[in-house]
Image (cartoon, rainbow, N blue to C red; front, side, top):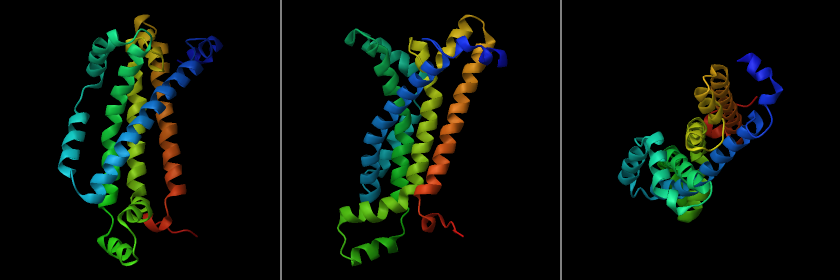
Length: 225
């Protein structure tokens, strides 16, 4: 595997590491943005009002049980006639990744808001804050650790699952695994798996660092010296 990495021809070109890495990040980023745009307001509503909690939990549990690999194959078959370009493969891939990311984000936002101390609500109401102001200025800042935790979990799941895009003729780091398996090139397969793992670890480290930077020490009970 090390000798495979040391070969400069494996880093550039259409099937090189850098182009595949950019494709992998691109699929993951688009799916994460769409999932966040859907799940965040849903989590805010159910967390703030307390309505629809059972429906949210049931729906997210159902989404978690979906088989990603089988679902992307099914969607490619169903949507193949609707597109004439690579979108026939990109759209199903994005939809599967979005479905995978919705549960942790929505539940993270919901749980974070519901965990806010009732006395904090009473104090905010006593100050004359409206419901929207309470949500924006009190609940969301207090819920930030769980919100970031949900986004972090969703991102890692997307990055690791985006490898299946290669199975439907798309790019990404999964291309190294699929192509390596087809050619019985186990060094290439190991390199692809290693790169996906390293990317996930880098993203996990980024979120860990970001959480320490943006979350108030008072919320995390972290003492600054």
